[in-house]
Length: 217
Image 1: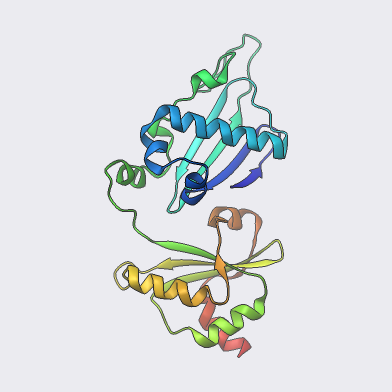
Image 2: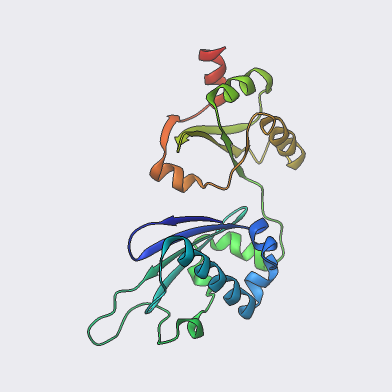
């Protein structure tokens, strides 16, 4: 799980489907089973409280983004008026009695409907992390041309390459081959493009492999 403290009243966490399974839950339970989804949510909030001292008190705003490889959840403590009223959707003396996974909270409604209809999620993008820029140079020497759009960011002394696949030219086998080649020099990352756009530094906006190969080989 990846946790980001936004401010005093807001915390965001990213949970991959692998993280969910390692905690003893299934993807279907998260979407269909209220008791299980509530149990997972409060387990995460307890963990966040231990790591960031973000205490759950008063009504909460909960926003969930369904993503390719997991879910991103933003939790905000609502400001309560003097009359103890708030516009937040959940709130009472016992917050745990008011957890309600409402589909309207999901930003990517099309992807959520695919989940609920048991349709496969389209594999559209990946994020790779490289400890050293030299690894990117080595990769650029060895990788053939693929139908992908790439961008490069630096963040916390590492380099992140975001990859968008051309769905008309690449099938899952092509994507697997691409991932296999890139993973020889880097590794898949759970850091989201949204976090990099907000906190990282853009190194190359496009054509990462071609640009690195042109200027460093």
